[in-house]
Length: 127
Figure 1 (cartoon, rainbow, N blue to C red):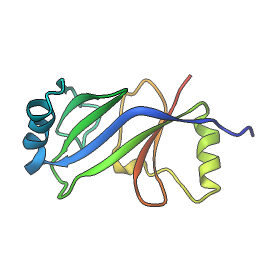
Figure 2 (figure 1 turned 120 degrees about the horizontal axis):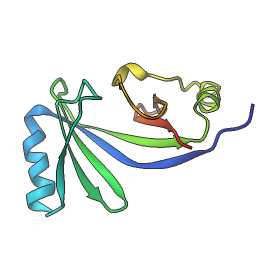
Figure 3 (figure 1 turned 180 degrees about the vertical axis):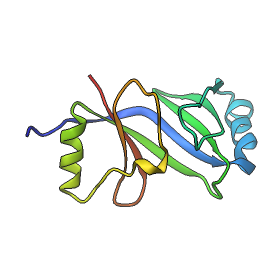
């Protein structure tokens, strides 16, 4: 099996408790003056609302998660071979944890993983 290539994705997700969501969106939109757009999120059943912010070359997703009590930051990775990537990661003890946010009807294959510190990453197959 060939070794997969990993690259950083352009998406960063900030999972925000419902009680802090409006103030957080207002911070990026009104305080910082960033262009903030509301997004459709039916593909992510754990997210009740979402806005995106152009954050330099990245897109910062502000996701409202009604069941969260504290914010969390999630990152995105890309790979050219999802199966080889999952096998390589499994060899280091990192296994998919797709239950953290089941996704449906995507146009590409993905797995959720957590780094050793517990930070969630979306691992998406490109190409």
